Amino acid sequence: MAPRHKILMCPPDYFKVEYSINPWMAGNEGELNRDLAFKQWRALKGALSEYAEVVEMRPQEKLPDMVFTANAGVVYGNKAMASHFMPQERRGEEKFFKAWFIDNGFELCDLPDNIGFEGAGDCLLDRGGPWMWTGYGFRTEIEAHKILQDSFDREVVSIKLVDERFYHIDTAMCPLAGGYLMYHPPAFDFDSRIAIEKRVPSHKRIVVDTMDAGNFACNAVNVGQHVFVNDASLALRARLMRVGFHVHRINLSEFLKAGGSAKCLTLKLTEPLVDFTDE
Image 1 (cartoon, rainbow, N blue to C red):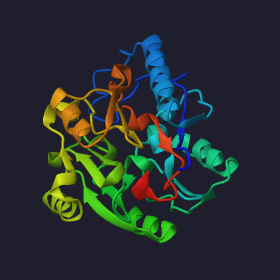
Image 2 (image 1 turned 180 degrees about the horizontal axis):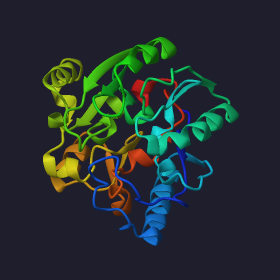
Image 3 (image 1 turned 45 degrees about the vertical axis):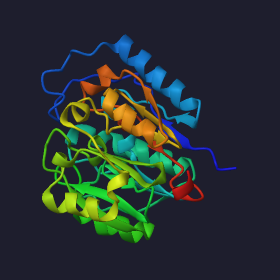
């Protein structure tokens, strides 16, 4: 029997939009419906809990974006590399994420303080090959890539983001079980698109159009054959269902105001499972 996925989440006790560090936040300062945000967060947690163990970490006052645990760091086996945020507004989160990893038995890998790296927002384990897709361009610096490769002893494939709306690769790419890849090509530069096409066969590439990408369809959580997403068009849902996935739509409108969705709100702690190709 395959091990059960474990996912880290952080309740939105202090979540609000009070500054702008990505294009989605601009104009949304003070526009958050906190009661609705709590309801949506609980709905996502409840849906994920049907298929995975969800653990929570304590939120911290004056750190509104801690709810986005994908940016806590990246986990591989019993190792974790905690983030070093590019925006000053999020740097206060770092000590809490590092403490959580240590307290929960992870070996913390070293990352120099002068290198920007924003965790599983910019580092995604492929589900069909032995590499990590790792982004740069906006919130992670390419200097972090070799450190990741050396720390985890796993190939890193560097891909560059070119559209500031997609400031982390997990807003424009989602590796899926069985080696499928859901992605929005215009978010990446030419060389990155070529790298993706060389590594992922055409029948396993699920291209996401502009409308779906704008609804954060790529910012999905994949647990086995289940895909949890804010929204997806009928065409995209049909494409996913044809290759065996069950699509769960959970309205996360309040978190989109801060530039995040389902994947941003979660961090997988079981990376990889025993055999990542057979999740």
